[in-house]
Amino acid sequence: MAAVVDKDKCTACGSCVEACPVDAIKLDEKATIDKDNCIDCGTCVDECPEEAISLD
View 1 (tube, one colour):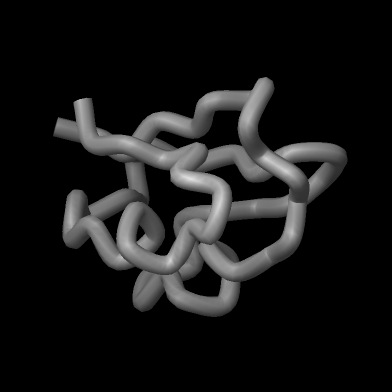
View 2 (view 1 turned 90 degrees about the vertical axis):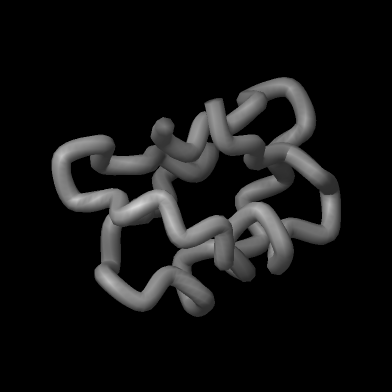
């Protein structure tokens, strides 16, 4: 499983970047998750106010 960002829902608020314990999320115009570093903890899913991140 890996976290996936729905680019249509992401508002680039940065909540997921601050919450990620392994710094696997970068923010440009939208959040991007480095699947090689993601540990599938789900913290970003819980923190995203737009529900733009899911575990697939």
